[in-house]
Length: 163
Ligand code: AR6
Image (tube, rainbow, N blue to C red):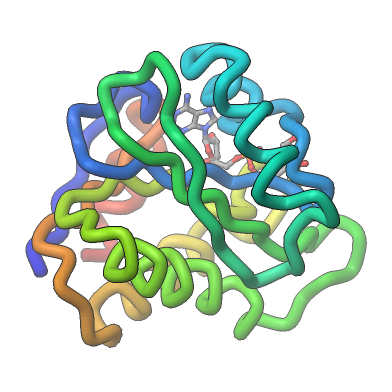
């Protein structure tokens, strides 16, 4: 699998699936979650309600339509909330592993990832990058491209420095 880093907005990526950093409720929120629901339109929330009536566990992943975004699917993951004391790193690596498993189930070959848990949930950014990269590299998958989408120059340079 190729891993590339771009600076930009994940909602604009022309890939099979974009990954969302959601929460357990699975009804939208702020950060990248808010951006994805805004860009995808109401179809994303409708699909969330239908597929995840009880939400999703921390560390797990599941897919919905991408609605009006260029991608075909959103693969939602629920990262651990470091700020609230969820600091088990395997919950964070699980998000990337489960996202790739869901991609394999639906046949997504190209994916775009945000830095799960590294925003509102407060996971230390360097470690969030390392957890992402080591899990993407260490997971057996049919996914051919994992694009890390950095929100801003600083995040871009940080990811590149840890590749
Ligand atoms: N494209 C790419 N990356 C983005 C974008 C974007 N449009 N917007 C933000 N980021 P966060 P979390 C980056 O806070 O920490 C929500 O309310 C951001 O700079 O979106 O997992 C959910 O509903 C950061 O590097 O997600 C949950 O309640 C990364 O995406 C909670 O926040 C993740 O930041 C999840 O918090």
